[in-house]
Length: 528
Image (cartoon, rainbow, N blue to C red; front, side, top):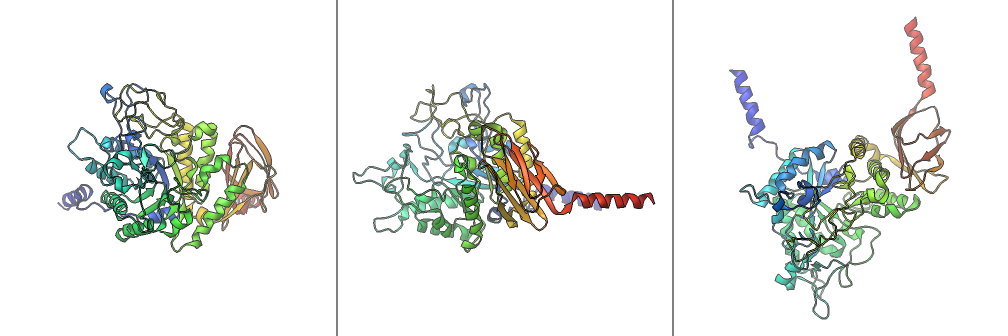
């Protein structure tokens, strides 16, 4: 009888929501300790079913667009790959007038307090809001945190409905920021410099909606286009409700210009002072760096964040965001692998776009062709070639590179296992005889990680890496070695393939000669 009661109680505990453990947001703590491994996903394509294989989703031909319900089907895949945080590209409704693409750009927001009806599953009676809550709940069940994207500008549709929310030039025309012709710039400040309460309340309503969904943070698109005081008030409001609620700024220390002549510009450090927990850094420029010096400067900046602000701050590895070309286009699989292991061995949060893990080049076969059907006023399948499609109902991000997929899992596992060393260790860039070779070490107590990368994407690069204290008799374990370095006293001789990267670990206290001596002593004792 006792066994039956115990079994019944156990079943109730597992199945009843009354006994289910409530999710406790810990994203800020995870982020500022560089434990976040983030995947950016577009729900509209995340688990789309392109049955005829032409890359575009055509519901009238039996294809199924991505939605919050079928997105759940990929969460175990992400968990198994080591992803512990999802960045949802905008899930708000999109504009259809002066649109870009046949579905509309995700960043042309038409409402701050509703969800995009394109993400609704029509095969049930749930609202899209209920489906989104269920999706986020399923993420949390798998210990995956959720960041929601906050677009920076309003769609033309929104401008037509509420022109007073938008900034105008001297001729009273709404301002088009940068070259984003489908959106208009919000009027966040009054002429006297005070905040515009109407626009601030729009953003505040977005925060309320995201928190109601039980999401864990916000990524602010082009955060530099709002004044520091705007963000300070909004972040204080959110964190008064949940101190762990993350605010990630799309901002870089290499950005110095506003997105429009009339727009504010707030540099990254002022955004961090306003309360943001992290920003993008300048890793998107890595492909253009010819030597190790810019990377060294970036790491010094990151290390300085620990003491510069009252609250700890951190950075994401912005090597390949949705605004950047696929690494497969830039340098094929070796380059993608290099970016993967750099993120696994630098003191940053890893960040990837869906499709990176399997080698998607985002070369859609319909790209920029005339569309037979459109859901906006644009009749062209507008895309940025080599970048994930955010403008159309397109196929699930894919690629068939199993080797890269395996490396992805291994590198993420290594990052988590080495987290304390990466965060607290002494970081040192190593001198080399070839400027195309980037080398660094991280040491904590007796353990060291050594990373050597070839920046040249076309040719093998040979040279010497100088590292004081290393010797051939030390215990060195290869983690990733496309070509074995020759270890000498205080130096390593390398010949690395194009875009190759070497990752080694070393126990500074263990020498092979001592191990051999101890082994012989043990054998002699056993023989006696």
